Image (cartoon, rainbow, N blue to C red; front, top):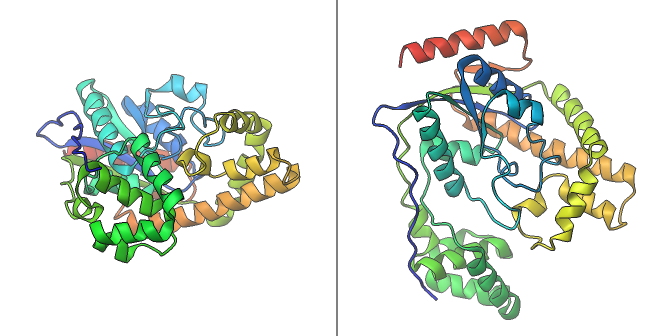
Length: 325
């Protein structure tokens, strides 16, 4: 145990800050439609910043862009990883920087859109450059922990990374595995990596927050989850289950997946599945809403209810932003 790791770096960004539009907001807020409008108006490429939409197997459940949207503008980082992999904020950031640089070279305006606040914060503010740990290494630590027990795992963590051990909840198995995996793979404790935050990239961002009234948002969530079921979400999750993946993988915990799995296993009826899925999505959206209100600093444009006049106003602001760069 204790192999060194080398990190792949994103493609070099130009010295002049790259212009990028960032559209953030909770699920079902209409942010994807706003991003597509911008990409069509300005000749842009839409870059995904949703941690679940990166997975190939989850198109319906995660409400990935449909074929009409994909044909209307270039889309990047959607469905690019198999569900058996994990995608950290650091890994996504490196891929996003590559796509932003590629869009710039192609003369396209990068339009980053998503509801994963940690991803957007990593992109705009920088993040600790923790190496990606191969899944085999993570599983080796998990297997050891299954045999040795959580207390042995915490004792090991206290010995090699006391700072991380002190801040983790006593029974947080997944975070113990994560911390031990980083140490065993790199020879450095997770706390040391976390203290070395990478510099923010040379980006000049126009920020847009899509924050509908909560009653409007919750109504959209209810309607959308029911439509997902009608459009084949059960078959999609059935295919995911057939892969027999580790239940701790992010794709297996995507909002809607546990509720559909419970129904497929005969634990709930259809009505309960839909109600549970809608409730889980509302709770998730509430957390996202709170994050964007508190953490998405000083958006250049914000919308509670999008309209044609607001679209024109937003376009004018983006034009001014680009002229003053």
